[in-house]
Length: 123
Length: 123
DNA sequence: TCTCTAGGTTGACAGATTTCGAAACAGGGT
DNA sequence: ACCCTGTTTCGAAATCTGTCAACCTAGAGA
Image (cartoon, rainbow over all chains, first blue to last red):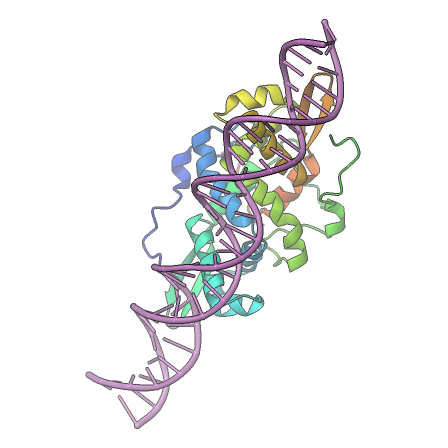
């Protein structure tokens, strides 16, 4: 699965993350970050992500039945999220558990900060 | 262009935006938000977005030469950003100007908030 | 140990979407 | 009328989505 960190995103190396609204992104940075947004750009994956993100960890066996999709399809979507660096998976016994990678999540959030807009309380 | 607001996203109607990490998204919400992430999921569009977001407004005539792509292609990408509700365009005389829609930007940012993680100053 | 069963992933494939450029078109200035 | 900016249309090539079949791993039972 991914006990040893995959050669995937390498968030640190990007020198990342002035908010989009502050400094334009260079091509290299964009090439690293775009796949993360792309991974979230599918309704199924977005829901998978939100289900995983809203708990400490989530079993695939609870993810799959939430959709009208076959097991392999869910597995493929999870792979996309994994390869984008957004989640991490670990097999424990019979089941496979997914959890978010907070660094990646944080990086995307930071990118979307709108300076001078301290996320209004009521939003 | 888009003087009258396009029947596009309708951010308010979604009842949107508990952070992903707080509550799982229902299918309907995901269907509305996913296209926005999808729009940012291409390196070219991500850079376009960042170029637009980092200034009050941006002329297409300054956007196009920043890429090794034809005019029509850039125009296509801008259309995707527009239809996702992320930017707005306006023709003034000869040139067309693009600017971000802060509400959309804010919505995405809110979705990616990681509660208990007040965006560290240095990040 | 050997087998059986359940949970997940991988590989291969058809059908749908994207991406991009050439050419044609529309808006606006001169 | 002519030129310049940007968009649209259309078609070709590449990529994505979802399924079935096959496979691998782990636990249960004989």
